[in-house]
Length: 253
Image 1 (cartoon, helix red, strand yellow):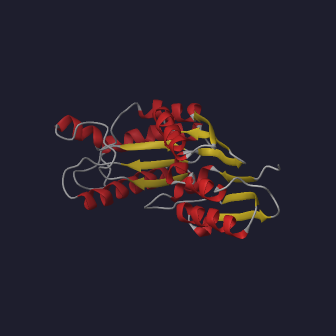
Image 2 (cartoon, rainbow, N blue to C red):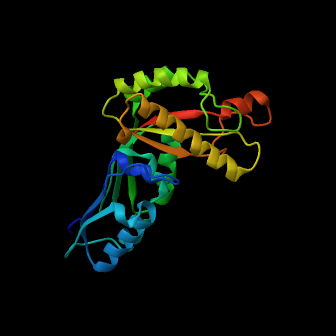
Image 3 (cartoon, one colour):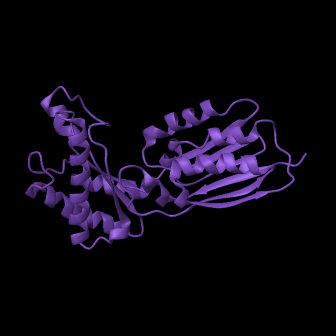
């Protein structure tokens, strides 16, 4: 029996499609052979839903290939938002073998991401996940930041003097990873209105990006995302915890 192949090949930039800002994007190429037009459309529809139709390049061929029952549904099931956590990667399905390879920025995300995909793959399908951490470049950025808080004037997106001093160091670190794209992520604590916090986090990420552009970091290397209070790293019920949650992160893509 011939094996049916479909490959979803994805690259760094299209993870910048996450809401709310698309700073730059490279296309997602979907290629391989499927047994019929319905299978092709089911897979493309899921890709469009996750990444946007304008970012998906369709290279799927319809031809006489063998496929297990329910194959297209099983493939579509693993095309989820979690793919956006994987950089420089590839998702491939060959018959009943599902393989996911690529890099993840945070070591702590590897196990839950793998487990999430494992839960989506049902018998007779098997998942082989090879996720690693994008360590070298991320380490340079993390060591430059040193867990310090980039401060802003209270309730605004205006950088404090202490914040600009840290960003001057970050510009130097970014030059050490020249060629790599970096996402600036803004966070707030949980005080106040969630919608306003989301906007504030976005505005602060934009302010950091603009400051770094002023330090000659190319615009096309930087993207931004505001997450509001959705991803705290400390307890929001204490002043110290809230201070830690009001932060800027840099993610090498």
